[in-house]
Length: 457
Ligand SMILES: Cc1cc2nc3c(=O)[nH]c(=O)nc-3n(C[C@H](O)[C@H](O)[C@H](O)COP(=O)(O)OP(=O)(O)OC[C@H]3O[C@@H](n4cnc5c(N)ncnc54)[C@H](O)[C@@H]3O)c2cc1C
Image (tube, rainbow, N blue to C red; front, top):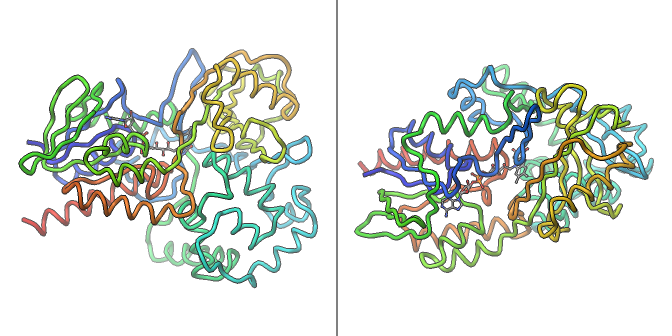
């Protein structure tokens, strides 16, 4: 009898299994697809290498660094090209790099001189009285132009979401803490720099915040995790029913197989988890259905180098919604990491859809390619059609942490605690969507389970 059933073999499921095994527990992972990895997938076609889900990982937590070492992946790591600090946004009909120094800030045409001057007043602005959206937070602290020309495309790029609805407290917790603890973003940033210095001097872990991937793409992480646990992972095993019988959890797959364990961890996205909990906990299921995860298409386009006039000397470009352009942005994949495109060619990973344009989920692949090429042609100076393309539509790409999200997650947890003993959830709809967040949460969960098991022995 296994200690844990883990439903789903995306990064949440795989890393939870990895840490639970390390803590001395036995696990059985069940995955619906014929392959592991979920939203992290690298596809190879000839000399093109495309990440059709997550494209990079920020080294922002200790567990993710430790996991890379434990999986012996250090030699596989590639750090983003140094020009990646250039992040472009569109204003007017051209690309401008976001300022990263004071002199660049003074010169940037992205916002008006008045909005630049307004930054001086930031440390003296009051704090919010209630939970608010990231749009209202930025407009209140920095001004409306920063919201419209910097924040808006940034939120579209990360969350494929609507900044007027996304909660600053839930989705941008570090920014929210800066205001709460220091009364200002500038003071908060200074305090962070000081704290990092102090930690470094004391020999504590300090995150490098380097942007990385792997020579063979982000999928390397799934493959390495899966290879260490082959005997514990079952693919093509979609769980359609979970029941608790005589104090044990039983998972029934669509093919009719049964698996049992003492505890279960559900690592599915909100829509899939809602379906699985429909009979077990109707209240949790209903609340999960309310967490929006809009569709998003990743459109990877390859061109001959000379087809693109722009030097592509940055991480990518984000496009403010007010311009009425459908494409949300493009990552300059072959600039950031090596081995993404054949010699003398470039690879762009473009995004279209999201919460303000969910209709794209119903478009054909060719329509998606045509729209993205049409949108980017004048911005990047593209000539002709792509020589390579690959499209992936994620029907429920990224969970949206809207205002009220934290309260909703608490209610879901309470309902599950009441209706489903010995069941836990680890998923991207709570505690962070990014790769380092997912890994850190899995590590913390296994540590807590180890403590609980010692106490109850
Ligand atoms: C397009 C895109 C780009 C992204 N880019 C980045 C990035 O650059 N950097 C970053 O840090 N993060 C990025 N993210 C976020 C990050 O990839 C995800 O948050 C993370 O991979 C989620 O992992 P997960 O295991 O929680 O979910 P998933 O990867 O969705 O895993 C859930 C798994 O459960 C399986 N499943 C579903 N139903 C069942 C069932 N009934 N029975 C068994 N199995 C089931 C699914 O097949 C899937 O494999 C991106 C996400 C998307 C969609």
